[in-house]
Length: 208
Image (cartoon, rainbow, N blue to C red; front, side, top):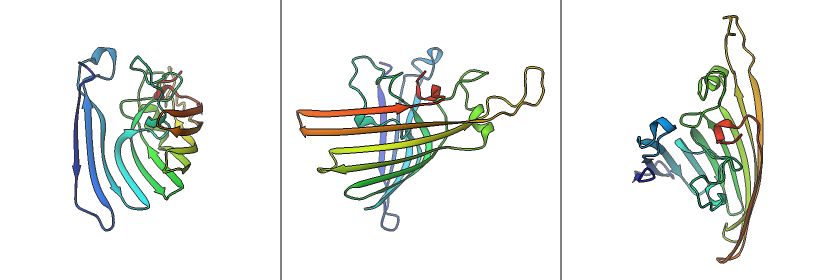
């Protein structure tokens, strides 16, 4: 019951040479054990698409989580804590042609938050005054069903502004993470996909 989802998708007018689309989706999964069966937002974004560029603003999958590469687990965990998993508010630009996808994104935190001295909170991220930055490139062939890619992610947080004794203590630090992945298909019955992830300070991705 808690995985019941509601979805709205709208298609708006063209903006120059770009088509516009809106997408909103929620379920009753909650965000913590105490809020199970409460309605939560999964996706909510606006998107502009053209032959070469896509612009997205709103909340959707973090670029380090790639749905098509998600393991087909029996339980509802999508491979965590091995596979990074997160939905985030973001501004994202993708350049694409027949063989390449180049993605750049500036990302924030809402439902999935870093852990720290006061528990899971986006306070550490806001105090660092810098968005989570992500850059990714993908090379594809055979009608884009086969591809290899890699990405790097940079996140800066500030665990606290004052010590327990109320002295100023501003010691931000930067975490760098990276992914490499591939998907190879012989036909619709034989598909190999793999993903490697090196992660620093990855509690906001449901990792250790």
